[in-house]
Image (cartoon, rainbow, N blue to C red; front, side, top):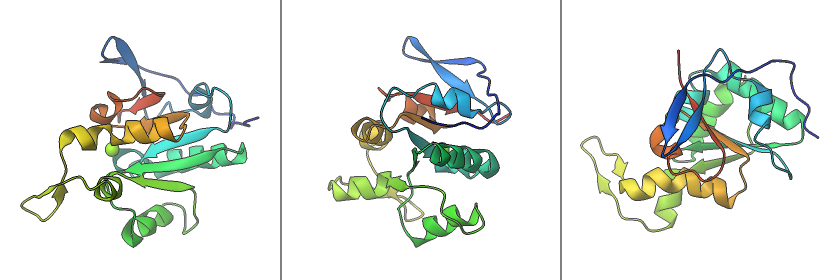
Amino acid sequence: MIKTLAKCYKIEGQIMRGNEPFTVIRPSTVTVKDVLSHHHGGRFKLGLDFHGVVDKFPVIFIDLAKSIHRGGGEVHVLTGSPDDAKLEKELLSLNAGKRWWDRVFSITDHLLAKGITYRIDSIGGKVFPDSDWDSAKAEYCEKNGISVHIDDSETFLKHFKTACLLFKQG
Ligand SMILES: [Mg+2]
C-alpha cells in the first residue's frame, strides 16, 4: 500500500494527444495523490524526466520521489543525457548528495547499445533519428511497467501507451 503525503494536487488544462487529452500538471499543483491515481496494481514505479522537470523544480519532484519510496515504490529518471558521472553528480547535487532515485534510463546510451546510427551536430553532439529518439521513453515505460511518467515534452509523451503526465511551468 502506498502511503502519501497530505498534499493535494490539482490537474489543470488540456492538451490533446490524438483524441485523448494529456493530463497537465503544474509546479503549484503537483500532488502525490494524482500521481498515485495511475497505479494499477503491482509495485508503483514513477518515471521522471530530468531536464525541464526535476532540474527545474527539484524540491517538488524529489519530495515526490521520497513519497514514492516511503510507499515502497521505485523512481526511474528518464533522460536524453548519457548515464555517466556528470549526470550522477547533477542528480546527487539536488538532494544534498543523497541518492533519491533507483534507476536512470538514458536515451543516448540505449540507442548506442542498439547500434542506431547517428550524426554529429555542429557542437559535437550525437543526433539520432527522431523516430528512435522520440519513442524511446515510451518504449522504456511500457517494457519496465512504469506506472506513470512525468515529462515536459509532448514530443515524447505522444508516443506513450502507458500513463503519463505533461508538466508545464507557470
Ligand atoms: Mg524535459
